[in-house]
Length: 546
Image (cartoon, rainbow, N blue to C red; front, side):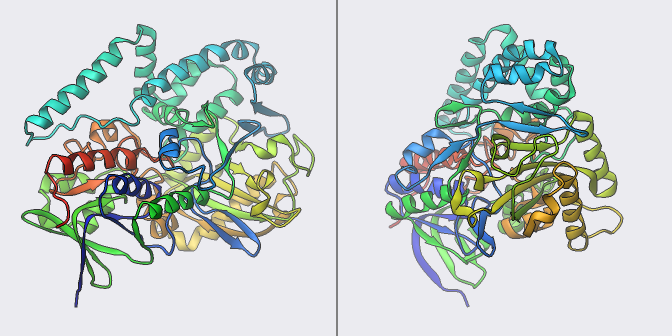
């Protein structure tokens, strides 16, 4: 038997970083807000936990760059203890048979490294970085904007808003010179492989840059549109330095715990260990949510931080949606091909190409094990046909090299972020059966570059695409809450007609990564959704609690 709880202005489904961000802004506007989180702790995929006795690490999300600086400032995250340190090197690429490429910390240092493989490529690096930054700037300028919502039931204010936003986009495009316009078009439509092949001739530098195109993206680097995924990963910054990545001291949970403290300071009520079973809706629109235990939380609006496919196919009553929209949401693309591991280490990896078990700069960087774009493409082909890459793409981060709180003295923790592993396995295979063999394959792959690695593993946790879905609600294991392809971006994210954070039912909103500007630990969708919700309250489209 259900019981009705007190009315809120907004109830937020999911306490991930975007849900927390949205809640903070809504509460600051004077709204009564409640977050309901299925897991025992808020944070979603950005949490820190002990995975082996004495060893702690980020559970899923694992590195920082995309967290928007406005969100950091507005939510007082530094005041709540958040500290992010830059990597001394951006990336380290060991090569089969010895040798390596180091990227960073300066342009000159990178050029010197690249020149060992191609003097021409080294000379082209400054122009490439300049082109990349100009294109990234176009996307960066749009991160905190609401896309024009092309719907079929627009009032005067909607029409005026769309017109203003389209004019703003038009003016921005007009201010770009023609080379930049062409570059932006390339990054939005071409494959990363085609873009990089046009710039460079040596495999190592193309591999380092091309890795960003397949992070969380279940595709070949030669798939059209993958260049945008590359661009998406360079729009961030750390401590005011653009395009770099860093480690959150205390793990990624330090971000969401800082957000939680700010949310609670602003009066947000947070309920953990409670799963939302369905959105309560009638002819007037949404009326709240019903929990799995039968309780109903009454609310003026419902804000979803979960994957849109999960929201519309599982939580919203099917009779409340039109058949065409429901059909399209069932076909909403969600697939990352991601396999995530944490390992506890007795010692640091001793790479053949960079000997030594003492902490060196390459240990503090993003270590990429994928020597060429063709290697990455073959990994994708393997996953499509076999289910798993025979030679997986692996990025290793060892945050304990800069954060002693994560492991006992002299020991270390490493994040292994791996591609490509098919969320939907062929030939009757099941992830519950092949999870551990896939993990063994990954450990063996790392050991080929660092011979001491396998023997140094004291413990591990393994998250297959199925585990990422069941534990974190990442449908298809998709870390972005939906593939970052042109048909699922901007006004079409997650669906044309509902791209401005407003759902198809009155009072239903989206604040998660399935809304613009997409995935990563950014806080931008939560920020933008809150602005639109507050606007609707002010205009009387949603009324405050009585």
